[in-house]
Image 1 (cartoon, rainbow, N blue to C red):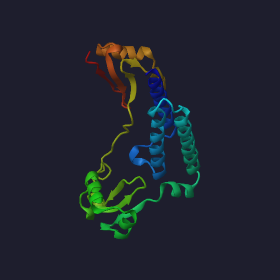
Image 2: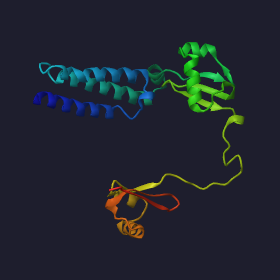
Image 3: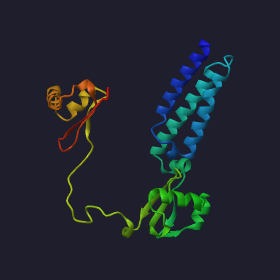
Length: 223
């Protein structure tokens, strides 16, 4: 029983490390090569868990080899256009100026139901509203609507806007992030003053942020 527990826990952490090594792509963004490697690693991870007779390294070593191959090929692809084309394929234009390119759809073996579904997800259900539709190597459809169909922006209306940027997280789960404080040039004394103004101790703050306009916002814990 203890052997099974050890094998499961050890394999889990090895698998977690391998997945972290392979990068941060989402499942929907995996290339065919990445997808095959992921399937093979998943199958290999089960081998040492099937029987205590099978040595643990029979599954771990092949997983590590596949992960190293993935990392090396991914690194090589960063510097080689041709290798990227071999591993990932090419993006295809399937809609141009509101017209479907049937030949490209056939090449990609991409049916109309899938196309229309992704158009609806993009918020443009009418093909004639699309300037360019690109089927990416991940299988996702990128949509560029015609200029007349795009949402109005402040630039179109000549309305000036200020910089927004991302807020800085200062407290998370009741823990003060001192590195973030240093990054914006403030210290614990400044934070304590802000918390004193709100009347909430740091340990009860679920989330505290400072936006680029200098506004301090806190969310309290419900405990």
